[in-house]
Amino acid sequence: MSKHTQVFTIKIILFATLILSYNCKKIKPTKKTHLTPIKLELPNQPNILWLVTEDMGPYLPPFGDMTVQTPNLSRLASQGVVYPNLYSTAGVCAPSRATIATGLYPSGFGANHMRTTSYTDVTGLPAYEAVPNPEVKMMSELLRMNGYYCSNNSKEDYQFKAPVTAWDESGSYAHWRNRNKNQPFFSVFNFNVTHESGLFEPYGFKKSEFRHYHSGDTTYTVQSGIIKENETQNHLSKNTKFNIPPYLQNTETVRRDLWKMYNNIAEMDKQVGAILDQLEEDGLLESTIIFFYADHGGPLPRQKRLIYDSGLNSPMIIRFPNKQLAGTEDNQLISFVDFAPTTLSLTGTQPKDYMQGQAFLGKNKSQTKRQFIHAAADRFDGFTDAIRAVRDKQFKYIRNYRPNQPYYLPVTFRERIPTMQELLKLRDENKLNDIQSLWFRKTKSNEELYDCKNDPYELNNLINNKAYSEKLQELRDEMDHWLNNIGDTPNLDERELIDKLWKGKKTKPITQQPIITAAHKTISISCNTLGSSIGYKIINDSVPSSWSIYKAPFKVFDGDKILVQAHRIGYKPSDIIEYHVSK
Image (cartoon, rainbow, N blue to C red):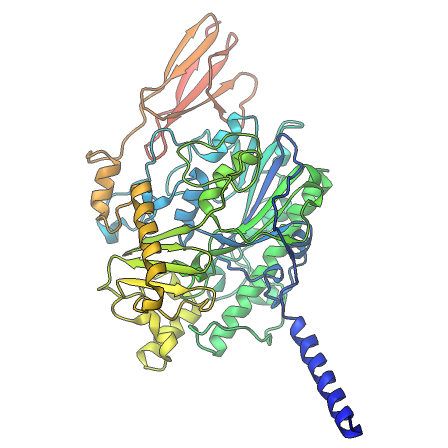
């Protein structure tokens, strides 16, 4: 080799090393992947902590996005397991939360129209709630029946009113710290700062978010309003270079919205850190299974509300006691419908037969891994569509039941996002490119098929490509099987849906009044409404903060006052009945 050749070769190596060094800053850290089942060592009744953020795709360093640093979540991931293939059952919060709360697909029990209790002036429909079969209980109620203290801080939004038996406490001060000594807990903390409304102008953090720094302190006053932008913490530079998806325009407006989105994520990470610090301060870190996840995909246009991966894919991290499986990645497909059976399984309880998901962890873990995830989109506020989707590890099949109406729906709330406003302006000026224009087509294909591995933004519809005919038929068959299995009739007129839920009655069904009987200072309670939960409080020297779940007759004393309420999910609750024990 000549001297000139040697010099040239050294320069090439140095240049390649420099490029590799630069790119490594943006490459997802290598994680060990589970190849064989590993038995976890868990307590009989572990504490369960859920940290739930809103409207966020996998925009975190543990998932390969290095745009903003999230030290608390990155530490959680280094001590736990990263799950990159979690999918919500809808691209919006309330239907997804209905799934999480019950273990049912929302389109199978009337929970998929966003929203069921509002926009009545637009739809002309009465306010209604989703009505599952009578045996269905909220997962938290099932945990309470098995001795768990269940707290929710503080968003509910299930498309139905939670019975008083659902939580020991649900509100801005709800916390595991309020439980009885040594009682196992299931505690949920919701972080709203990443919600799509966090992109609205004027920009600033919501004051109410800071309750997370004071959780468990009931002397703290929860505030409302917005902190001004110049008082809002800057977690990253406004000059940051963002990876802009091809369906959005590369403009100052979009870059500012992306800055807001990532800044909100960094603030959420700080709030997560506050809860984790409290857990560690209480000496509970190694007796608690910690879940972090988002309630669906991202907040931007062509993300939230859609059933492309951008609207469904949610990042999830789980930390097990004593850092078991630390720093690993589990690539199995997981659906939100799996959360309820999995949580019951982790706490030693057999998942209910009516649940439509499968446990991916715990004593009653399913012997087979999930092959498909399913999702649905129906009404969003005042605008109705009917779309169903099924996805395996690589391909997604979408069926449009209203192909003659546009993909884009003019949802007023979304149009408050500056990026959405600019998209519409550029659309009207014919300044969008072919990819950006796809969402604004006036009609839809009857069917769509995407290779999500090679086309992650789902832009190239393969429905007419004969090379994929076998895969297409497989996913068509799977969708038909799923719809039949959960009792979903896509594109059913919403008025007919209400008639079905209300059994043909013109008004919302009402839970019958509970029946209280007493004999020898023993109280028995019943309700003639099938599937109703019964809550009660015994009042003597003080008033309990939580409603107890009635399971069997109980003893009382002279002078006690009993409050009782019955409530079947989706029905109007009964009145609160008082019973006085005579002296």
